[in-house]
Length: 441
Image (cartoon, rainbow, N blue to C red; front, side, top):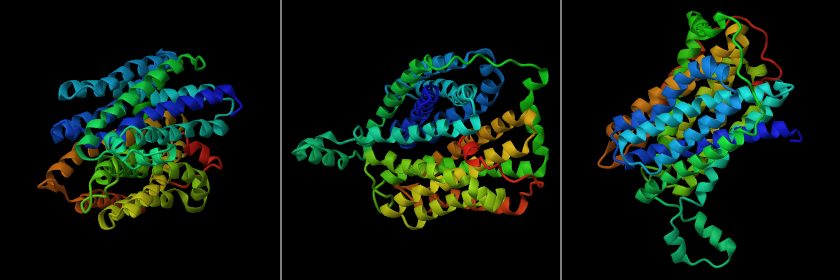
């Protein structure tokens, strides 16, 4: 990138999603190790979706209209970074939940604020935003790799006494932590996330000045109410409900995959602790590649069929988990995340941009964003800990086969509902620059 401002915006996105990518994949296995009950785990996990729902109103209706965007970013990541650092040294429920809630309430609005900073400092957002926003996906991928050298059984490495750098690296990469040692070491994910957040707080002060937006009319203040009114249209309501179910399937994947990968055969896959996050990050690599063909896919298949394929990606992934739980198959099927995300969630964002009136389009995006990051996640986080630890675990052994059938069936029914009931009115074809718009999601 020869444009220095664009490069700064790219780095902003890398750090923004690096933070989230550090702690999310392994938190689901870490909370039970702190002896939190399934209900307490749900409260902690739901801090993020609660913040997403609050952020729908705060970031779009207040924060970006009363604060300079770069200063809001700096403040949020400073305080939020300190909060998530504190999680590494907290083992009691009340302070853990409080710190997580503080972090999420401050972090979630910065996702939208980062987009606002990017859009405000581009000459041609349609051409440039995709190049900037892909930094977020790269940041999520990069977040996985430090832990290949952190979540390591160093005593085993010492006992192996490797000679030479190549031998040492090979021994380290093959000596990942497992079991209780892995759960205890997961606290490092919060330390790394906190350091990245503090770095972004400082870096935000170097970003271009982005003054608060002005509100010209009272009606604009309540655009989100107009977005809710659009649910009276059957095709919008169907898509909104299906999105909740598909988001539930997505966050079921996040809730259970890390634990499934870490569990030893025959119940699980037996992936070493330092490789769990890199394996899951394969989905983000596939996401980048899938985005490149999204525009052509939309033009050829249309809205409904593209979204159905995206939902069926979850069905295929959970089918492999349930019926072919061997390491090669489970690792390869992570690549389906690209189809699951791009063909459904990114397509939903593009569809909303295409069909919603211009005066409520931004808030309509927020409405669906609140479903994807909020309600669907809230639903999954409320029942997934209970299902895995109480319903499908007996004598310390989890029945992953039948556990993964729950989101499999839910996703399949969502695909059927979309096929039968989603009938949007005729509209112009998806825009040629769909790839760029998709990356704005």
